[in-house]
Length: 237
Image 1 (cartoon, helix red, strand yellow):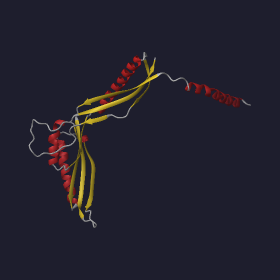
Image 2: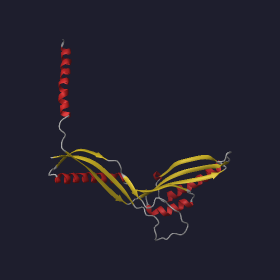
Image 3: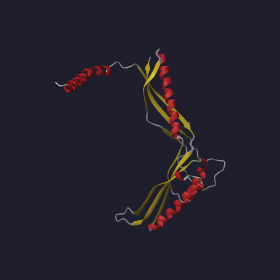
Image 4: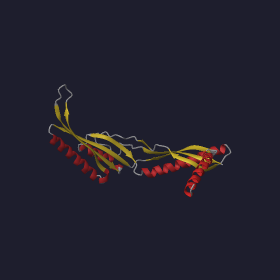
């Protein structure tokens, strides 16, 4: 047996000898742990609203329907610009064109329909009502969604998570103290799913042609709740 063969054989024997020892380490006694769930909620007033606006035009001439749609969309974009909405906060979501037919046994051609959806993020809520009225007067004939929210969501999520971790530690200390134990270092931590919930009193808009009372607000955006939940295991000492 040459030197190379002896060397390989020695390594093989070492691996076999080490395997039971490693397994014994893995199967060692589990440390004494206390596992708790920490939660946190942050309630904030919305500082922006996302408007999903639709324009639908119908005519037996496709060119006429498209021209009508384009004219309305241009008015919407101009109104958003006048309200100081930045270009990055204006987006064309969908544009569809198609023919409509009746539902009779022998379908009749009814005309063409052109629809376009524009999404506008308004960051100055004081302009919400006046802008909505102008947008509806300009030809917006479909509202796909009006959603109030907050701009600094990431910052609020981080704050909620930190509070949830503190809540978990406080729970662990209190529970351990009842058993005459003390809490040591964290052993494991995981974040539960779920972040935002919106408690909004105004997620739709009804247009009333009557002159509004200047002293009477017609929206109540409520509050946005940012939630965080973590599960932490601590060693007991």
